[in-house]
Image (cartoon, rainbow, N blue to C red; front, side, top):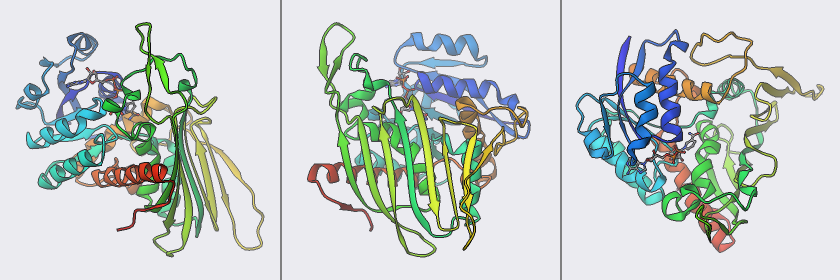
Length: 383
Ligand SMILES: NC(=O)c1ccc[n+]([C@@H]2O[C@H](COP(=O)([O-])OP(=O)(O)OC[C@H]3O[C@@H](n4cnc5c(N)ncnc54)[C@H](O)[C@@H]3O)[C@@H](O)[C@H]2O)c1
């Protein structure tokens, strides 16, 4: 078993998710390489306790990411820090010669994204990928195979969404993800957008244009210290894109919704693809359920429903009939990163982690969406 020695920069919610996934690597009996976490970095030393209590083998805990990047025993970095730090830390990681799994949105804005992409181009020997786990859900893997097999015919429409609801509560205190200086001008698009774009972009559905409507519904929030402060990030973004299908050149509409204020939707990621020969839809609201329809001329139009089990890209010890969850998708995504590093290519088109080029496309789209909303117009993206 080959070992890839990791440093984690950012020991919050996602830093712990990765460490937990690495700790149950034995869940994936087919893997021939595994991650070993040897170093951690966060701003507050109190964040280290959970790691050092639970992960044997950590030999460095530092509040300075540069010290971690100087550590010769670290091969790769997982960087899960607030968005305003992505540009600086991702570029420094590549300059230090470490492979990188970076969190979305892969730069706070398009300027940071451009900088990161330049660093990626300057270090072609390093594997650089963006964390995005939803395509690893079994039903979504199945939809990916349908796309690969070109089963949909002419695409009629694609609707992708990632909806959250907790910001409906105006008393929810503000945090860095709701502050422009840390989260960026994109607001909800920066936070949720790459999750929505990953599968469509991997399918080759790159927008030619966008018309966006953005809303800031809750304009101030408690600061957690007894006062109210402005909350200036976009809560909800609805993007209507036009996309030309590569095989036919025929244009179809694609809607991308990233909402933090979607009543009743705790954490709902969904995809719907309507085509002339087949259609499919999936939502994490019903995490086992895959719905699809095949159609041929004169035939009935019947939606089929299938309960998906633990049918994963990377084999798991979990029985095939059992449910798949969020932490399983994180584990699969990490398996994909290690597989790609070892084999220099993903296992399949839809079991590969999001690429820097896909993140760059998302930045072009979100930047155009900001302009579209501001100017009340359709913005062209095509080169
Ligand atoms: N893939 C997903 O499903 C998913 C889910 C949530 C968040 N995220 C992304 O993960 C990233 C982090 O989000 P989170 O929810 O884990 O945030 P968090 O607030 O829980 O954790 C952020 C961590 O970054 C550390 N940090 C801040 N400044 C630092 C610095 N200068 N040097 C080193 N560490 C520093 C903090 O100490 C903290 O440990 C963001 O990019 C976010 O968009 C991804």
